[in-house]
Length: 188
Image (tube, rainbow, N blue to C red; front, top):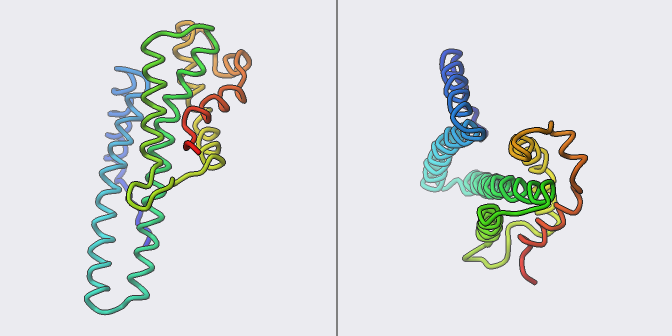
């Protein structure tokens, strides 16, 4: 079962206004607002899936119930990846700033350390053991998050003096991705 939440035009307009207001308060806050909306939407979908699963099990329809379980597993993995990507943006943002400005601050160091810890924690399979994403998959997540982190870094490096493309020419993307991967990779 695939669900899609469709907003009426007036709701979409209100969300856009709220997003703009949050962004005007602090860059990135609008994205956090939209993430919260998405999380609440996701919770509703999970509840619907669980109710459908219960119904199928009570009817004895095991094959259909197993299909829902597979979908729930996929949704859970997607949620893990989205969580990891969110922390990866923060991690990469600060690594980019460090390299671009050739300096660090305690705040940046703490953000890097905490983001790495959160990614490691989100990636652990607590009951089954092991990890959701291997090093190659983590690298893919970092690569996907990098452009967003670079956009945000362009607003912060040298007080927003550089466009994203200029900033990307100032730093070594591969070096930053490798450093990030070293910080978050599962210990072997």
